[in-house]
Image 1 (cartoon, rainbow, N blue to C red):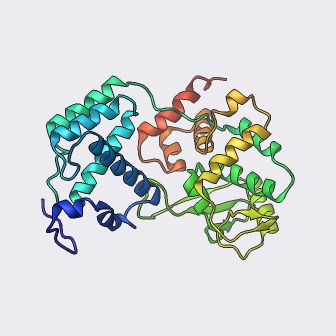
Image 2: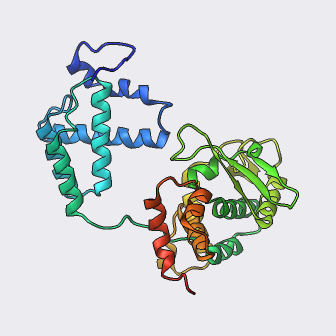
Length: 310
């Protein structure tokens, strides 16, 4: 297969050793988190090839099969599959013959997946009952104002961590009934930024208003860091959401074992489970959370079905 690239590759050996230069061509086409994952996967492949005295670029079918078998012994099948895709991507960028579609490699990957059957690990859902405990546990400080607004908004909008921290003040529209209409501009499964519209309750709108009244209107991101009791005009990292939930579980006085089951994804999971218990069908839940895969939603809802008749 031939690709149109801005330059031709004349010396495969030297340029393959500096694949990072070619990797920059992916910038802007993929999310930064995806770029970091792929880069780490290719570096892991390089390291493995050095240790096993194999040529990384171009890789042979035998080399990739051995990598999959070796990595499959102690890595999750999803990690092994992602590394295979990263190897494929670099071979294409370097205009090298791509070995990754060979049937032997497909079989090797199937063996990895069959050797480690099991469901993906699921974050504990922050259902409405848990959300109320999380909100009550937050301190009456500027940080508590921000965290209450983030927790309540993340739950009602069913956002991923990256979607929550990306919301800007200009994405909010006040409605006559005291609720908010919010544009979620970009999601993991929406790389071209078509966005989706979501709505809040009056309670959540009030929590957001309290936060905005303290931090002022001059900062573009809806949520921002606080340093020495002053708001900082900067976007929060998605990791902040994970820390907020983890720390919030402690403030909510949950059992330590139970608290460890919560993650930055818990608000999205819990809200989906609550919608099921309230009688919404899968299609409605998928629209509310911006899902395109019914398989993912089904994993979230499976934990709710045990209690659907309570």
